[in-house]
Length: 505
Image (cartoon, rainbow, N blue to C red; front, side):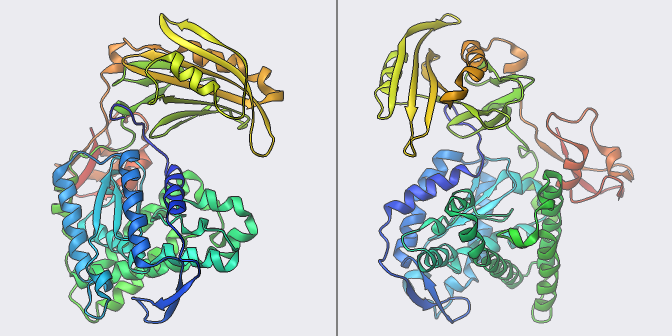
């Protein structure tokens, strides 16, 4: 955290988008307007003014959640390139309505290791440091930024909202509009709660939108003179990342995005078509690599990390144990520990609305649906704390048992919320209390003085296989294949003398 935020998963974005969308009044019915791209009539769930409002409000939450990557030169470079591509897009053409043509766009670099880029309605484009580390030249970045501009130009969030209104009255989940280049909308987990049938019904919207944005990304980058076919190399990287994560086993027809391998070939085909009309020879690899030299890659341990069975936060100087087998999800405003069978959960966060452990505890105990069994002050490792043991019932009448602990430390009040189904609580309370009782000051300087891994752009002084240039040992959290993907090569590829590589430091 940058003092009080943690690294995230993209799924959290769905919650923020839903909150913003629910606050924007619907037009009351689906409207049919000409598409800026095709000129044909399309159904839209929002007016352009509403799309701009959605983007403005969601942008504030996204920046607060994820934080901006602290590199003004890199941020200015991404914005400059984005504005150049926007200038040749459909939104800036003479026949575009003036309210759209004059809408400003914002391009941001987020401090996240996730390899992704996404767009919100009304002109908000986000790209992560994770994707910047995996791109190899400016032409590839131009295709990615053009793709995200294409989502806004195509008003894809609004078309998804319209499809939901036409297909299921009153459902607006389709307007969760953060379209990620890696695959799947950020709100897909939320959308799936409406049922597999509904999800499959609207998969074609997602795939069609992605294909249109791929086409626009190639078009806009080609119009600026970039070798747009370079974008296919990045989609090959996406395919390799997916295969490493096991995503390659998901059938193509079950994905809201076209298969990365399919997109790789299509981008090559579309780029070849534009080469018949335009001069497309700009790659700008050296310029791009100079800007990403020294970029943070992977998780930033300064914002919290897990080692062994312990979670450490070197900036805030605390630690707590993680029960064996529990998955650690390090989110922007909380750390979530999930039992292997997902039957128990521990949520750690900062109680920003309380000045003491007792105040936080009594506020928690007073919530609707909480039935307190026991509460009171205690100490944990010489720190003042307050515990609440309670039963709770959700809106579906499911019964839970929980223990909530609030601890004063370092000027903050930290909260643990541990819970499971009421019938399972006895099975998990040992694990719960081991974490709660293990919260303590972090004094081990070897844990405090950790640094993030950064990429060094080096020029090779000899020839050899890519694997022969890798450091030994590899940085924590990286495999040799990870680094090969970052460089868009294979481990056994021959690297010439004088070539540039991105290697971890």
